[in-house]
Amino acid sequence: MSGKVHSFALIVLAVVGCNSKHMQHNREKAFWDWFQANDERLYNFERDQEPTFDLLQTELQKVDKNLTFEFGPVENGRREFIISAGGIREAFPKVESLYATAPVLSRWEVVKYRPRHEPMDIALGDLRVDSHA
Image (cartoon, rainbow, N blue to C red; front, side):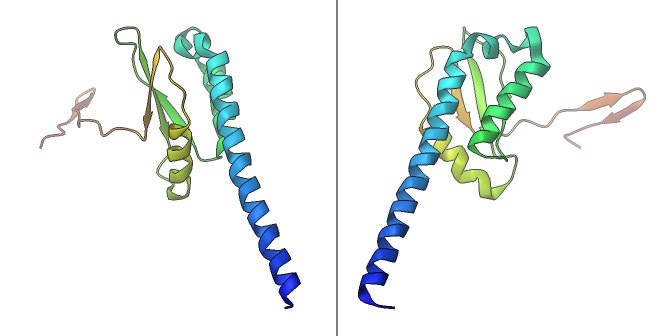
């Protein structure tokens, strides 16, 4: 490969790489813009849960097809918004970058990855499973 062709190829790769990062940043910004525009609906999702969750999942999948979410309960006027990769390692960097680009939201605490929950006992009819056994 000649020096000019090699230099041209490196320039193209650099531009494509920068453009790819810029496109990802734009998807993240678009998501957070959408989130803020839909703050009231998301915060009070219980009023129309299934359609609200469907819309949110659609917007998250524009960032990465493997991203998922959870909401925490309202506590002291704030609610957790948990961004998760659903256990898919390839999506971990997207969780990190979406979390890193989150704006300050007055009614939300953005959390990356699902926090570990304490085991709980389960009872169904006569069947009981003790989590501490």
